[in-house]
Amino acid sequence: MKTFPLTLLATSLFVAPQVMAEELVDFYGRLDYSVTHSDSGSATHSGKSGTILENNFSRIGVKGQTALTTDWSLFYKIEVGVNGAQQDKASKPFSARPTFIGFKHSSMGQLAVGRIDPVFKMSKGFADAFDNYSLKHDRLMPGDKRHGDSLEYKSPKWNKLQLGVSYLMEDNYFNDSDLRKDNGNYQIAVTYADKFFKTSNFYLGVAYSDGIEDIKATRLVGHVKFDKLKLGTIIQQTELANPTKPHYQDRDGVGYILSATYQIEQLLLKAQYGSDDSGTGKIAGRVYDALGESALVVPEVSQWAVGAEYRLSKSARIHTEIGQFDVKQYQDFDDTIVSLGFRYDF
Image (tube, rainbow, N blue to C red; front, side, top):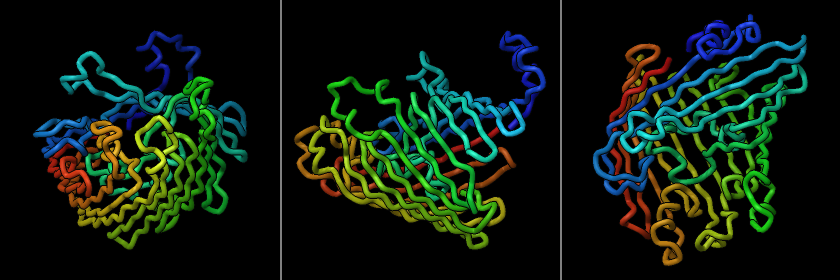
């Protein structure tokens, strides 16, 4: 991450420097690509099978904060996905990612508006050892999307406890005849400690989602550090809350992942196992997209994965992932993933 005087950035954007004077901005980005082989395409980001190049959410952005008074400050982020390396994205080289503005008070917390990673999603911390890759937890269970036209409040921390609330401006999403407008369209989360293990050797989270991402769900998260070993879990009960989807009343169940990572100098070893029977995750969604009402049995999806990361420097790393998904009632959607990638942060 690089820090520049905002006046320099403003000059390049033809914004009057006197408006931006004295403010600092963080300019950052990530390039992350993998060569991935997939048997069926059920688990890849794009749904494509064979040997493909995957973009693991490369991005570029700016963020900053400026004091308004002794107690009040303004903060913001403007971030876009970078898709230009993909042939099918040639006409859309950028995509929407977190973009918001908000106000923060030293004792009352902060409120932001815009496109924000909601609190249910972010309660996961780093319990998923394969987040951002084709073996991540959202293949099993939902709750990992971000949303525009939203509000988010986060409280100050009280003895390592923090409350978060997300709310969708539902009139931006649904017309009056859409039954989903009757859902709460909010999320609430409580977390303890921090996901980076700076204040303790464990992290806990509990979250509830009502209507956002067309689900009603409860999530429990735990992540603990024992020296070089980290163990994590996400347990989630989910029911589909969109009556227009095939067999939505049957799509209700429980999913979980169990993860472990072990650090050996620059090398990080990873392993994960998971399962879900709710029929609401990405792979189950692709089953219903393909088969519709003829998918009479709710898919049960299980997964195992192993992988490794090797840091070449503070900013650069190579990574590899190998794993399988088993879709119990729909073998055509089973998938084996073998992937080798490179990531660079700046």
